[in-house]
Length: 280
Ligand code: GDP
Ligand code: K
Image (cartoon, rainbow, N blue to C red; front, top):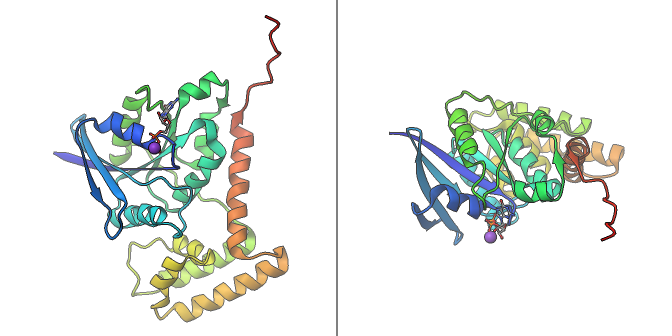
C-alpha cells in the first residue's frame, strides 16, 4: 500500500487535535517523542488508495529551540521528513498564527495551510483573500472547520496531490534586510562547501538560525572546520546591523518576519465594517 506521512503543526488552540481526531478517528495511538516526555499522537486513515499517517506535533508559536515543544517540532520535520506538513492556522487569529507559518516556510518543507475555524471567520464577517495569501506564502491554503468536519476531503485531496507532486509548493522565501541577506548568502555558501555536513541540510535555514543565535544549530555547526569562517561572517553581520540598524541580526530577523506578516494581513484580510447599532 502507498503511504503518506503528514505532520500537523500549529499554535496551541489552532485546532490541531480537533483536526487530528476528525481525520484519524479511532485509529490512534499515543507514544512519546524521542528523549522528551511530550506525548506523540499518531494515527492513520485510508484515503484514495493511500494509508495516510498523521502525526500531531505539539503546539508552538515559534521554531526557536527555547522550549521542548519547539525542539520536538523542528526535529521531527528535519529528521523524519514527513511528506507533507499541514500548518493548522486559526482563521480568527491570523496575524499571530502566520508568524509560525513564515518559520515553517523558511524550512522549505512541502507545506499546506489548513485555514481553520472558517465557521467563526464567516460568522464574524472577516474576509480573507485566499488567492493573494497563497501568492505571498507560496503554499496552498485550504479553508476548513475541523470541529464541523468541513473541508476535510479538500484537505486530504491536497495532501495526496502534494505527495504525488501534482501540486507544486513554491517555497517562497521572505527577503530579510539587506545586511541579513548578505550574511545568509555568505554563511550558506560556506556551509555548502563543508563536506562534513549532511548533504540534505538546508544551508539557508541553518544560516538564518545561526544569525538568530540558535544554540542547537550552533552546537551542530561549531564542530565543523568551516566554523572559523562562519564565526567571522557572524561577527561582521553583528557589526553591520549594529551600525546600520542599531540592532542585532536576531532582532532584525524577527522584525522582518513581523513586517512580512503585517503586510500580508493588510493585503489579504479585511475585518467587517463597523455595523450600525440596530435600533430594535
Ligand atoms: P489544539 O490546541 O490546536 O489541539 O486545538 P483544539 O483542537 O483543542 O481546539 C481548540 C479549541 O478550538 C477547542 O475548543 C475546539 O473545540 C475549537 N475548535 C477547533 N476547531 C474549530 C473550528 O473549526 N471551529 C470552531 N468554532 N472552533 C474550533
Ligand atoms: K487543546
